[in-house]
Length: 345
Image (cartoon, rainbow, N blue to C red; front, side, top):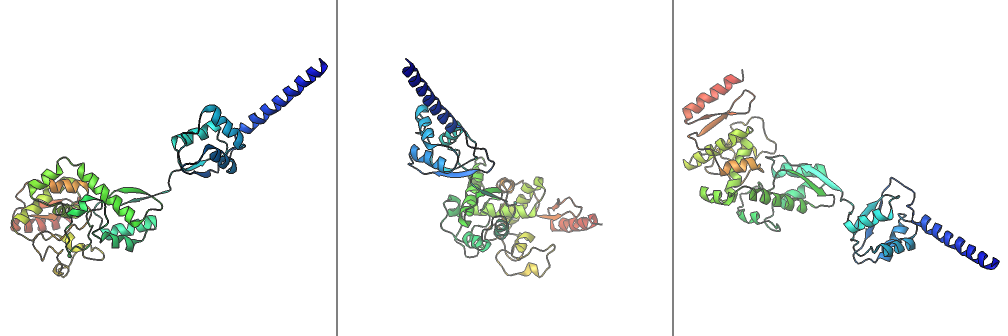
């Protein structure tokens, strides 16, 4: 009996030791605020994953983790990807992370393109915010091929276009993965323009009713964008543009001349208005060859739904409101110019 009791005691001690070993081995490793990155490759077996987690210092014992997975019937739903976990996580937390595919968020870069920006302004902004190459961005924006967006097919192959994609890159705030290329960014901005256009109810029918192409619509919208600050005037200014086009009048829009300058001027001189370029609406009738900026949705909607009026002229009020005085005749327009000057005094 004495020998049997000793044998039982030995077995109890061994079992207890094994249980303590397992209990201690399954406890989380010492906590740390420094995250550990690890990658689960596609097709990786659970035994390999367990070994990797031990190697990375996220678990104490790979063998015990394998046993725990088997006991819990886990491991078959683990998803591939690059993960990040802080030492101190439990087995269940690791299992949940791998089952849900809670991969490490990509390092993102954020930049904002204001409404009315040109390709050149975009290139500079994106370069400053992301480190991408501004010259490469402009070079790509002049290419007519390689874009997986249908609206690009609406752009005429016109040699007079200053930049092929001008007006087609939607102005907004974007977040892009740090390893994005200049082409990735342009593709994203083109796709966003197409998406935002499709959110306008019945826009294609409205376009057809006005007898416009998409290229002409975005060109008018870009003129509105650069001419108007006060939202309530967008549709009215769009109406003035259409009125002048219908009467075969030159548009005489300062913004088309400013577009040709390396740096916009606070005030254009008469010699600036004489520049020989198809974008100069002081010298040429009709619309310029293409958009002069990236218009907002508000300006696109205004170009689709202009406010009917008998106005052919407008001049900016010099009272700080950035609103305009509108006129039906040139005589009234001259009077409004004088009124505007009086406002500045």
